[in-house]
Length: 257
Image (cartoon, rainbow, N blue to C red; front, side, top):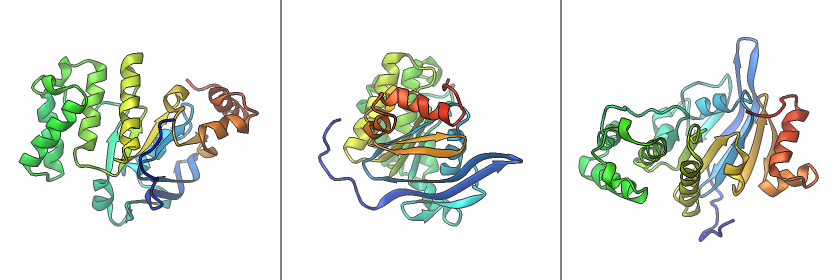
C-alpha cells in the first residue's frame, strides 16, 4: 500500500449508528454501524442482494432509515439534511448525466445547484477535467464519450463542491478493465492526498485490495470489519477473495455475481 504523507484524522467525517431498514416483511439492514475518517478508503464488499444498495440510499439521503442515525461532518441527516448533504459527493451505479448536454453543461448544472459562483465553478471544472485527461472533451456531448470517460466526468462532478465524503456505488459496472483500473486509481489517489474519505461499494474484490479497511456486508448484517489482510487471516490466510466468498457462503449467500 502507498504510504501516506499525513495521519488519518481522529474525527469521523461520516458516522452511521445502528441503521435499520425494512421493506414490508423483508429486512434489508439490521443494526449496521460504520464510520469514515478524512483520507480513508473503506471498501463496502458484498454480493448482490447483500444490502449495499439500501445502505447507499440511506447514506445519500434518498431513503430514510427506520432506525439509527447518520451524520456527515457532525450534521444529522434527519434534522440538518442540507448541511449534511453539502459534505457528500456521490457516483451512482446508474449514470446521472444528461447525455445530450455537453460535459461542461452537465458540470455547470451541478455547480449551480450548489450555489458556486460561476468564476469559481469554471476554474474547478477546468482543474477537474485536466486532472482526468478530459480537457479536450469539455464541449463534447456526453453521449459521444466512452463509458470510462463518462465515469470520469461523474467523478469530476461529484468533487466540484469539495465534499468531505465520497460515496462510490458499484461505479465501475460496465467498464472495460483499463477504464475500471483508472477510476479505482483516481479515487485511491484522492484519499491518499487526504482530499476525501471514500466508501467504495462493490462485489469485485480486486478493486479494494489496497483499502484501509474492508466491511463485508451480507443479508443486511456486517460479517467483518478490518484490514484486507485481516479478512484473509479471519479465514485461515486463504486470500482476501476466497475469504470473502467463504464468509458469504457461510451466511447462506453463495458466490456473488
